[in-house]
Length: 145
Image 1 (tube, rainbow, N blue to C red):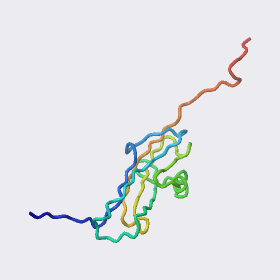
Image 2 (image 1 turned 30 degrees about the horizontal axis):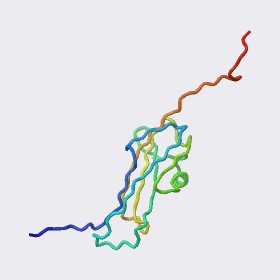
Image 3 (image 1 turned 180 degrees about the vertical axis):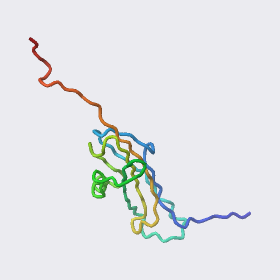
Image 4 (image 1 turned 90 degrees about the vertical axis):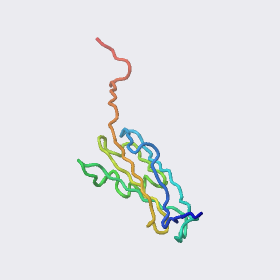
């Protein structure tokens, strides 16, 4: 009996966002998007991988009408780099995103030496406004004449 075994020419890391593909948040709350990342099996490849160190590249877009566009200034490349200092998560501080807006985040994970062999995952974040909270000027007691 014979069996055919196909080798993977270009194994790439596995990556996916934790949670639902579309997530909601309130503008006044922080939000963390986390990745699940897995190295491929590198023993069954004809490719020379000089390092199993992974590299990460994050991008973000904002939905404008029916098109995805630049998410600047709130998610400029510099801001995204700051929010992804730990590359397996994107930590969005309080009041970073626009209420009523929808954002798409893409994380691309590959071998750090070239990043040519990579995999991407996307997640969408829908941002709502916080509830209105009324406060009465003058404290808890008031004299009425």
